[in-house]
Length: 283
Ligand SMILES: NC(=O)c1ccc[n+]([C@@H]2O[C@H](COP(=O)([O-])OP(=O)(O)OC[C@H]3O[C@@H](n4cnc5c(N)ncnc54)[C@H](OP(=O)(O)O)[C@@H]3O)[C@@H](O)[C@H]2O)c1
Image (cartoon, rainbow, N blue to C red; front, side, top):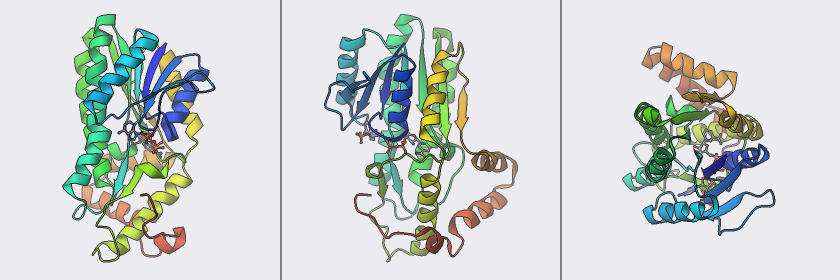
């Protein structure tokens, strides 16, 4: 199978690209930091910025010169911006939406005509547990992933007659993410009225990711999707606790659910326990 993949330079995208390659697929992988060339395992590496129409077009043209067709598109590119709803700027929201949501829209718009003409194809879109529930100080990311979830359901229904299957991958915390794609909103500082909660919440978020699931297993799970005759509409890859959190979110009244999540992320003492750091470089 010829698989195009976005966000293949680090984290879950890199693990997924390697797993797809091990499974014998031709993998053409894109990221901003790629300059071209071929990795040791045979993955093709092409420059790609999913926030730019021109870059998406250039990626597709270059990929078609390598592969002549695309059987599957796996969309992993994503960034995070941590901050309070009040203090995250519109520009900061825009940047996350442009990458995490509109980046997928751009890629799909480029690839769908090719798949329709070929009589079918597969699209895998990386959402998150945050596409299903909100947690404090991840509102930009949560909003973008909720947008991905709703959009993907529309896409699934529209593309079915053309033989195009769409699957949402919903990872829980995995110990994989690179720090250069995790930003703090510029306004988050000790002067913020949210500062104490922010330090607690971001310490828990960082701790949970650092102690999260194995990214290699997630890559293997995505690679297995390619060999299924029909992909499921959703594939949740998360710990039992995180699956339970989604289940409770759908079951409990909103106020009770919010109280549970507030307690989990913002209980006093969490920052000290998990070693909160104040504004690391590069985030
Ligand atoms: N790690 C987790 O625990 C977790 C949990 C749930 C969901 N996810 C999702 O899984 C995906 C990968 O996350 P990760 O944590 O593994 O992230 P990561 O290591 O930070 O990787 C993000 C990837 O996206 C690429 N990227 C960022 N902006 C881009 C742009 N404008 N154009 C093209 N590529 C871009 C980065 O490459 P360049 O910087 O080189 O462009 C990098 O390859 C994301 O969609 C994320 O939301 C991750």
